[in-house]
Image (cartoon, rainbow over all chains, first blue to last red; front, side):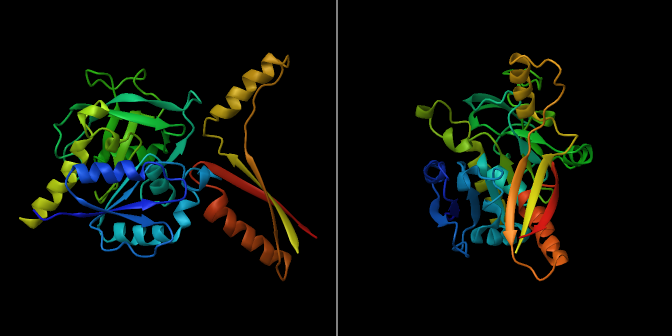
Length: 235
Length: 82
């Protein structure tokens, strides 16, 4: 398979952009950084919105980033079926931009949580999880103050009915419990995809778990899944 | 010129963890009668407009598009002529 071109968007305040570049390069792909003032995506096959504190998290996390010039293009790209991944602050931006449903509230504990967590891979029927086993428990770090996913009952039901919940906070044996719910998210949600299946948002950082020296390689599956989906399309 | 004072508050269905933490501190300060605290935001916006109606329209649009997220927040505002 030929190399993919990954566009990692840089907002003022992004701080996981280079982690993302490193992770995609580790997965063997070509990566460009795309500045938030750009109004073209430089022909990227996949767009990655990294973590950080875009625009200082002023007003609400991700609220100002959604009106940056690059986001108009990202929304257009997503609406045409392009694969978009938002991690942490990137997820918050996708929520604010309306590419994914729901909002993030401050963590229930009001503490910034920075540690390795267990995630259950709820389904492998997606462009982002096919490299995992169904129900697999993976170890990936989180680092956020506002990761408490909230949506109304109808939205939650729709997420479940359409199998859009991809990752849930869980115990080491895979059971989804209140005690494993680090931030108070509804349904222990750690990551969801759009109904159309081409937009992923997740609070944990797969890009920080791609080499054993980082303590876990479990995040690589997300990147491999994306590569699989392109390989399938090429077949 | 007009000045709008926009209040942004969490919708009643949203648990305000920040307000809850502040409530605990207020109780510790010796005010056990305080029952609930909810924290919101205030934005003071000055703008020029041809009429109060036009000013209101702009303020409402700004609030809906950016200042408040309708999934979790409600907003209200007052307008005064400067």
